[in-house]
Length: 305
Image (cartoon, rainbow, N blue to C red; front, side, top):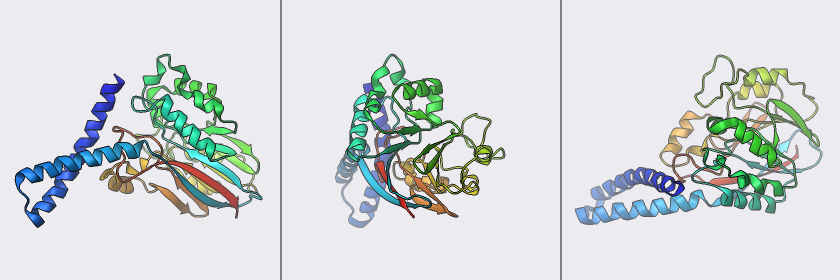
């Protein structure tokens, strides 16, 4: 079943790249006027080349190092941000072991994980060991869930994450050294907003951030799966938001659509005095192809401002 799912999802992505290849060969037709046979072979060859690269690129995990000055810190904190791993038909235990190995080699003292750990129930049928690699991580590991975690069965996701040594942050705050760390459920920004990717939770980012009893003299870090509710985080004195969800569009031309859909799509942004980092994530959605984006493990060096 997994093999058929993988094949079908690759073909879906390949069809999109076929349309892109046809566009390229149409332009070549205008400039060089190749024969129909040559044009056909060029189209097929380009499609196969782009598909092969896209699959390789999707499973090639890159490390991006980001240095962030944080108000109130007196010493550097070395952290790793993981998001959107999407364990399911297209990723399993071996891929997670690779991610954990790379993460460990970076020497983090803390891990922040912003959801979409699973995207199907493939690993829910007795495959209890799929998250075992997380048990080898000997540092604090904080997790907030995403929309796909809810869709496949949130209770299962949270149970398995908890058994693997992950600390679940569900609309609550914890502390690490000088950091105040808030984990938010995947929810709407406020009661007037609507988002098909938000959960059915009656809470909102606005309500939770207003209810926090944080110390304004200490740095405040927020974890939320989606880059939504940012004004309410800023009003609460947030210094840094870590988020994912967007995949940076994952695949051209959806990369262009994502820039339009999400005000905060990929990389580092600033809103008022708050810094925002949006990771393109590690996994993929609908097809195991990345074209125009990369699968990212983010090494964060939080340094005194």
